[in-house]
Length: 536
Image 1 (cartoon, rainbow, N blue to C red):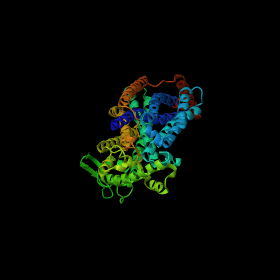
Image 2 (spheres, one colour; image 1 turned 120 degrees about the vertical axis):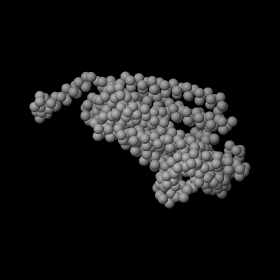
Image 3 (cartoon, rainbow, N blue to C red; image 1 turned 180 degrees about the horizontal axis):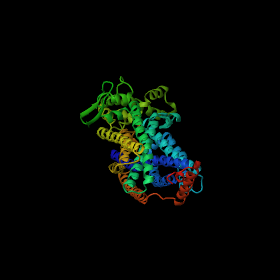
Image 4 (cartoon, one colour; image 1 turned 45 degrees about the vertical axis):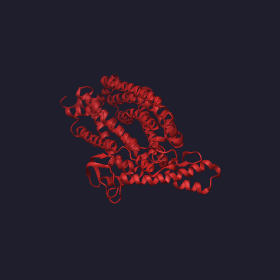
C-alpha cells in the first residue's frame, strides 16, 4: 500500500509539473523576444515595432498569468504530498525557492503591470527598461527554481546532521554554483527561447498564408529565425555540457539513457537506436556510433563510462556502507550527548552512504537486519526505467536537431532571399508549433524519471519522501488537479487563438505621424529624396 501511495504521489506531482511546464518555456522565450522588438522600436522609432511589441506582449501576458496560477500549486504540494521531504531537506531546498519568490517573481510581477499599462505614462526608454526587467525577472525565476532542482540532482553544499535528523546547508555558494544547476539553467532557458521562436515563427507563417499583417509577420519571422537559430544551437551545446556533468554526478542516469549495461572500453560509443531489455539487461539490435559517448561524457579518449551492471555492484557496496552509518545513527539517537566519539567517527566515515541504507526500508523494517538478497533487491532498484529514458532522450535530441534545420532555413530565406518564403515552408512552420513543447516535456521527463529511485540523489529515496495520506485523498486531489489544469489549458488555448485571429492592434495616429515625419525627412535631406528625383 505504501508503494501505491508513493507512485500515486509521484503521478500527482508529475501531472502538475508537466501542466505547469506547458507555460514556462513560452514565458521565458517571449519575454526576451518582446524586449528585443521593443529595443528595435526605441532605436528606430518605427511604429511597426511598437505594434509587434504590444501584440507578442499580449500573448506573453496570457501565458504568464496562467503560468503563475499553475506554478503556485506546486509550491504547496511540497508540504501537502511530500512532507517528509520538506522536513528532511527543507533547510537547503527552501532557500532558493524563497529567493525566487522574494527577488525574481516579485520583480517580474511588479513590472509586468507597468509593461501593459505604462505605454502612455512612461518615456520610450523608461518603458524599454521595464520590459527588460520583466524579461530578467522571468529568467531569474527559472534560475532559482533550477538551483533548487539541481541540488536534488547533485546535493552539494549540505550535510546530514544526526542530532536534528535533517540535511543542513554548509555552503550557500556551492548550492548556487552547483555545476548541475548551472548546466540545467542555461539548457532550460535556451529550450524556452527555442519554444518562443518556433511559436512566433509559426503564428507569423499563418499570417502570411492568410495574407494578413504581412509587415509584422515578415519582421517577426526574421527576429524569430535569428534568435531561434542561436538558441537551438546553444541547446545542443549546453545539452552536451549536461551530459558531461552527468558522467560524474549521475552516472546511473547517463548509463540508463544510453542503455549501456556493461562498461565499454574507452572511448564508449553512442547508441543511435536500440531496444533496451531491462529483464535480460541487454540492448537488442543496437546501432552504435564509435567514440561519441566517450567524448561527450568524459571529454577524453581514455576514461571509461561505467555500465549499469557495474553501477549496481557499486550500489551494493554503498548499501553495506550505509548500514554501518545507519547503525551508528541509531546509537547516536539513543545516547544523544553521551555518544562515544568512535561511534560519531564511524558515522562520519560512512554518512555519505546513509541514503543507500534507506533503500532497504521497502523490504525490511531495520536495514541492519538486511540479508544479501535484500541488499541485491535494493541495489537493483537504483536502475530507473531504461527503455522510457532511452527513447525519450532520442526523440528530444532528434527534435532539437530538427529545430536547428528549421531555423537555419528561415534565417537563410530572411537574410538572402528577400523574406520570400514558399507556402510549403510556411505550412510546415505552422505544423511544428507543438514540437518544442514535446521536446521540453521529454527533457523534464528524462531529468526527473532518470533520478529515480531518489528524490534527492543518493540522499533520500522517493519512497521515504511522501506524506502519510490515504489513497482516497490522493485520487480525489489528482482528479481535481487534472480537471482544474485542463480547464486552465483550454482557457489558455482559447485566449491565445482568439488574440491571434484578431491580430495586432494598429496605432493609426502614431503610424500616420511617423510616416509624415519620415516623408518630410526624405524630402528635406540635402535637397534630395523621392520628391527631388528627375523622374518626379
